[in-house]
Amino acid sequence: MGMVERARAAVLVEPRRIEIEEIAVPETGADDGILKVEATGVCGSDIPYYTGEIQGGMGRMPIILGHEIVGRVDRIGNEAAEKWNLREGDRIIVEEHIPCGHCDLCYGGLHKMCIKRRYGSMSTDVSPTLWGGYADAIYLDPNAVIYKADPKVPAELVTLFIPISNGIYWVQQVAGAGIGSTVVIIGPGQHGIGCCIAAREAGARNIVLVGLSNDRERLDLGLQFGATHALESDKENVVEIVRELTGGRMADCVIDVTPGASEPLAMALDLAKVRGTIVQAGFKHFKPLTNFLSDKMFMKELTFKGVWGRSTESVPIALRLIESGKLPLEKLCTHKFDVQDTGRALEAANRENGEHSMHVSVIPGIS
Ligand SMILES: [Zn+2]
Ligand SMILES: [Zn+2]
Image (cartoon, rainbow, N blue to C red; front, top):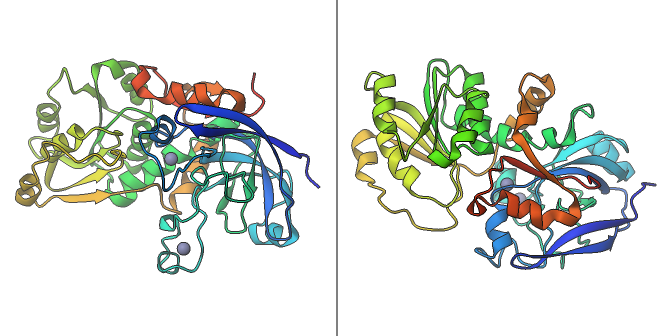
């Protein structure tokens, strides 16, 4: 029998209005369990749901957001313990997708694209309510995808498995960066940093992190995580600098991690080399692209790839990197809030407020 009986949860009831509710932790059976949340990272994709820019469908209110979850197994049934190879007290991370296991995507090995049910995007109307990380506990669904994590690492550092595993997938596995590559990364937030880490691990020669002049602090931080150059696109001619760096060949791959903005993808067309790869890794909030001259793709035989989240293979690699202690990850953890201050956490992560946040996490019980 676990310890948690009631969980505080930050329920988004309407745009920008969060109510802290006490929810009875549900009964569990042989094949499921309860996770006591240690930390949940705030994802940029939470913001448009929080502000109401995107409504309905996935993210329908009332909802407990939060899908970058690390915690301790509080209660677990016999079958679940055997299936997941877990015991009460073990630390795990929980993936956001809860794959059904039986659709075409799941049969094809694309479990992460099976998105009918996901943590942090299902309404509290759906039983048993505790589907979001901004709470003291979440329900461990029988189909949850979990990975064990080292309990010695501070929990908020473990939630960085998301930007780091995403970076590994985008830069190495999708864009194919390797020894000697020139990688341009647009967007100096936590995902940009994750891409810098991945590019350095891959052996890339030039790792160019691009932001705006008001991102200077974050750009400088990127230099500590592998970036060889950190450029301000509103002040510097990024295309010309990359041309010089590469002797005119341009970048092997360009990774755009910026949310909302379409200009970076237009610039990527000029930054990529002939037969180079552009990866759209930033969520554009369903806005159409402007100034995107697709003929440049045509004439340079570019490859344009979309990516959503990470690959299964990239997650353990990211966890081992975090556990190695070789990265100064604590420098990325700029903001921490208790569950009751989840609204403040989301406001802090909202770049439109001009906050200089990098990684924001909600940590139950932190004062
Ligand atoms: Zn996310
Ligand atoms: Zn499925």
